[in-house]
Image 1 (tube, rainbow, N blue to C red):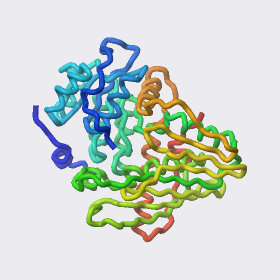
Image 2: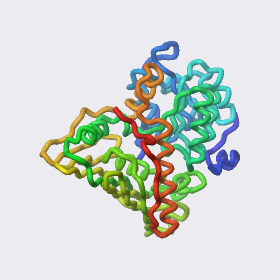
Image 3: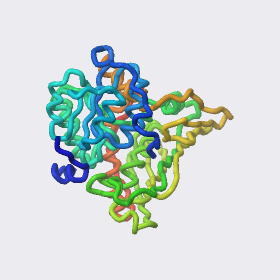
Image 4: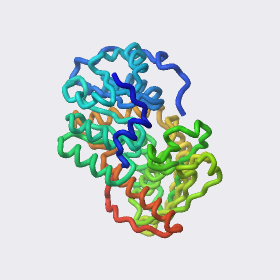
Length: 378
């Protein structure tokens, strides 16, 4: 089996388009679900830190799906995953033979967890193989690629979701409830920060624009965009943005820190900050009759929240990724709402592109015509 690293693979296909320290074998393999039809089999494409330390362990907690297969360009990882999770040889693929997954009835869903520039290619290939698709955020590196993914899934009559774990989190649902029921009146202002300080290898793929499509905005910024939207209950109608660079020797190819200001319907406004060189993890919405906030707002958990009437927002901690993958599986099995559809990922990429355009034009306001695109009601 030919070994491919992500950099060489991305170059070959020419798309243009904080991990735990625990070892892989510290997670127990729980049962063999390969013959059940009450659960859907998921194959993880790309076995980096997120798949290893978040998704795979979460799939030991899910009720409606299970870890059925893996796709990796690193030969040495195969045996570890076989030993840890009991994955059989017929459910292990590399990037070249991935298309043969069409013949594997054990795998129902393909979760693409690769660098951003590879999302479109593998999502489209998964759809062409008749598999339902979860695409890790951001959906792609541009809107054109988002459209291509959506079209491929519609053509092949498969379901599509974006890996927005926060959409399944009970804290997010509570915030949406406050907004919908006007618990604190009409929301006039929302503020959201999603940021961390990057001190890792300067050669990592997130700092390589050809692989990531951008920097902080493409990584953490989509969280701030998301919380700004559900923290006020509407899509923005315009955005203005600024970029700041204080470590150009480290952030040579990607954006370091970005701030943006939104205008929403009904004269509401918002601001967001995202960075790879500052810490931020907060959502606060101000209504006509009070406020509510989450701090932290975007972490794997536990989340924490407060309201202006002195109450705390609290739910028992559950693995967000497990809830997320179960939600999508229920959408497939039971026709429940898709809480993070492809249109939501496309909407956020439209906003991302508008933010980059505003920056390139000296902060000029960009008008957005999103309607209710990506808004999941009820």
